[in-house]
Length: 161
Image 1 (cartoon, rainbow, N blue to C red):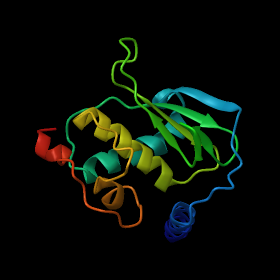
Image 2: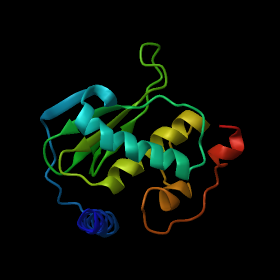
Image 3: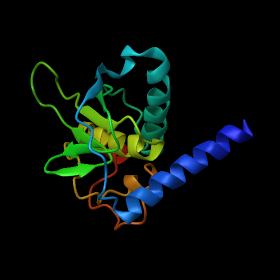
């Protein structure tokens, strides 16, 4: 158990270093390795579901929310808008998808990136704002990012969620 904790710490620290140094030399993935509902792959999805519950609890959100779809790309980075990043969240407002959204991550990722994208998803579902500027305190408290300015947005738990 201790070895697993140490390994997770190393992975998280690696993710923090990558996020704070602004990795611009990412090998962008172009091949889709998996695309579909988060719970479609039971063994793989279990860890994602654990991270999702951890982030929801950290944000004080108790209301049931739909899980996002998941898209896993080859490589180290993914296209997000006009930039290559460590992860990306696309919200959906179409009638067929409801307000589900999709998290896009490279196969070579870490829990920090996954939790970060879950925060975008939960903010979108609870406030209608995915917070592209990362002003929300939840990115620091629940997603493992370096210190940023406090949120101008209300807490999802204060919104009655």
